Structure formats: structure tokens, C-alpha cells
Image 1 (spheres, rainbow, N blue to C red):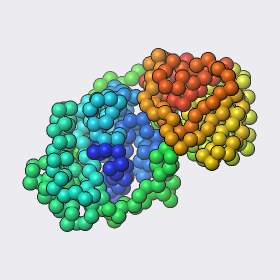
Image 2 (cartoon, rainbow, N blue to C red):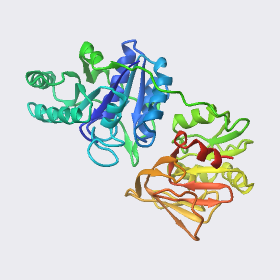
Image 3 (spheres, rainbow, N blue to C red):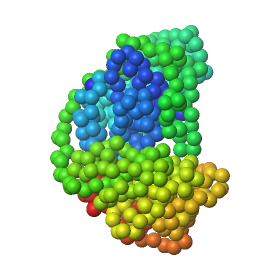
Image 4 (cartoon, helix red, strand yellow):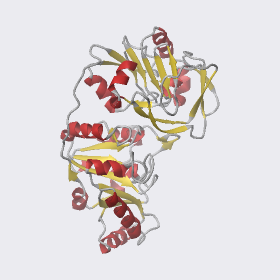
Length: 420
């Protein structure tokens, strides 16, 4: 697999739009691409998968870790000709500092992957030179390299030519592609992009202009290496029920893979469809958008089934939106209350401002991420479900619930204990 990381100068420069346009381009050229996402995001990978038909995996040096990132690439490299890693925020933005843990450049450096830089070129011509020059200099300081520039929101072919000539005059990485200012926009909502549907995926071909040879030359071959993680089959003969629909859709593909690798059988069900929890040894309630479907969920027979499963004492892990299902009430963005499963006496309330954002780590070593616009108000004090920073959640019987989204391979022993 030939591989490159697609970084941006800053959040909002058009990385995801460019990413989808390039994935479409590779497909139309008969080249088999696969998308990956730097960082803990759920929505961008769903869009990658909608375009390519293949799951998009998260990679980074903070939550996933470099060893697991390499292991995933080693396993998936044979299934695609071109791997494109969409960066997070700006190229040098991470958990802290400039280009440190969690940043796009840190991953590119440790994986020895070249970077294509997306620049919002609206209103810019010669100014692209000092901007790109500075990014290239800092990339070299982080043992990384930029091999091509992709300009977004370009006004015309003449504008693109000015940009390309300026880069060439100063011996900077070439302009390998550009997207014009009239390119289709992706629809957004509170947490970012909308969940993709076929009808929402634009055709970017008319707006995208690619120097085919220069674009392909900006990739480099990925050489698999490093030890494989040994299989332990610690969930052999265990069945894990998993809620999955548009209300519970924030699921890292690597978590599903890990459960299967450990010998677990998976039983899926849809709370929106009112399906009961399947016969299982454990239950996982992932996050998603319950607030958008609160009326339908309030009438769902699944909530009664979920409550009965929790009260049976079997292990349950609930994450973010999955936790919101368990309270007495969910108050939506319009301020309307909807009854939920009433497993626990708390209320979830949507708000317009961000409630929490950041990487999380439990004392068990389990890493994850917290990002939500709702708050949880409880009528009583609960035993914490976790020892992490951020939301420590709730422990009730054999239920662990919080706003955190956990990355299972980061702490196999912990997730095994949580689900058994």
C-alpha cells in the first residue's frame, strides 16, 4: 500500500472535503483507496467509509498509540493500494505543545509517512510561499516531510497557476491538486458533520483538479513491520450484545475487531427499531445521537429490555449517548423532555455550548476521549464508574457508564474485566 497523511494548516481549512474528493478520485482512477483518521473522531471515518465501502480506522500517538497504529496498518495494508490518513485539526495541533503527542505531524514522523498539506488559498497568491515554507521548516524539525500542497477554495485556473508558480519559484513542494471555491459543501450539525447518507455524498469530480503524476508521487510505500499482538481469546464463548443504529453509531472499528479477536460472539440490536437486547453475557451501549431521535427512543421497547438486562446484574458498558439512554429524562435541543429507561435517577440536558472535550485515561490504562454538548444532573451521588480524568461516570450493580468513549485495545485487561 502506498500511503500519505493529509494534514491541514488549521481546523476548517477543508481537510475532510479534500479527503473525500481525493478518495473519489482514486476510485475513479481504478485505484483501491482506504481512508484512516488521525485522532478520536467518529464522524469523518463514517464519511470515508461511505465513499470507499471500507471501514476507516483511527490512528494516533495519544489514544490509539504508535504500536497499535502500526499493527492496524500492518493488517490493513494488503487490502488497499492507497492509504490516505486524514489529519486532526492543524498539522501541529495535538494534546499540548507544537507537534507533540496526538498531533498529525507526530504520527507522520513516527510512522515515517509523507504529508500532503491542505491550504485554504482563498484570497491568497504569493503569500502561500511563506506559509508553506514555515510548515515545511517545522515539519523537518519534527522529522517529517511535506511532499505536496493541495489548495482549497481556489478562484480559477489562473489563480491555481499563480499558486503553483509561486511554490515552484521557491523550490517548495509542488501544487499536486486543487479544489475550486464552488466545490460542494458537507452538511454539519452540532458535533460536526452530519452522519453520511448516500444522498448526502456530493460528487466532487467537477470541482477537483489533480496533477495525476505529482499526486501519486507524493505517496510513499508503507513497509509493514513490528510484532503482531498475540491473540489471548479472553472472551472465548462470551456473547456481547451491541446497540447499533443512528442513535448509537459511535463505534471504533478496532473495538469490534478486538472483541472478535478475543473470541467474543457479537449480537447487534437497534434501540430505534425497538428490538430487545439479544441473549448475551454482556451489553455495550455506544454513543451517538439519541437527542435527535428522543421521541422515537422514548417509545422504544428496547429501553425496558435494557433496564431488565442491567438489573439482572450482567456487565454493561455505556458510553456518552448510550449513557443518556439510562436516565429518567432526556431534554432535547428544543427544551422538550422525553422519558428514557429510568435505570438511574438522572437527567440529560442538551445545551448549545460544548460541555467537555479531551483525551481521557483511566487508572487501568484504558484510553479514550470525551466530547459532548449535554450535561448530566443526578438526584443522588453514585459510586464512580472509572478513575479517569474528565467524567468519572457511574457504577451501579455491574454497570459502568460515563461520557467517555473508550478504545478497547489500549487496555485489554480492563475491558475484559468490564465485560465479564
